[in-house]
Length: 193
Image 1 (tube, rainbow, N blue to C red):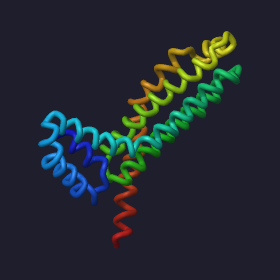
Image 2 (image 1 turned 60 degrees about the vertical axis):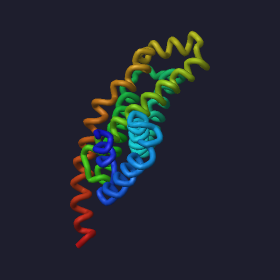
Image 3 (image 1 turned 135 degrees about the vertical axis):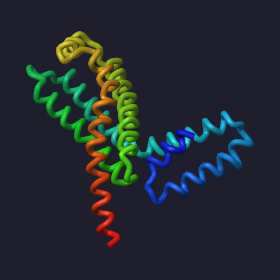
Image 4 (image 1 turned 45 degrees about the vertical axis):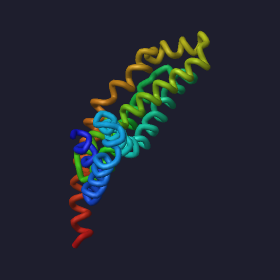
């Protein structure tokens, strides 16, 4: 099952056999007989999604805070020139995804974990960022705010940019993942010696 492969990618090597085995045992002995195969499959995917959520939510929240903060600044304190804000938020986003990839690969010793964490981070960030922008728009929808929104890139940018982050975010996480994977191999092998 693909979900088991995803689960194993997210786990630390020392936890892969025991956690995966325990979930499969519960799936076969308890969940499948009580829910049927389709229900048990959904249960298992839900369990794996929980592991992905725990790996990605801190990064998704940090990215969302950065994006929503930038959006609020653009709307309520618009500068004449957006280059500095764009540069800062771009480097912040890149740094968060590189760090997420590094951490995931360090922990799981897997580039797959870096990519999955980036995808989870992107999905969480998109949901939180778009929802937050909608709340801000519901509260502040006066002509001055709409003028600032239009001047800063428009609502299209606010609602589509979080969705487009998934590909470049995953690439950045893979870069961090490569470094994290190498660092884990080097430092953990020295710790064993």
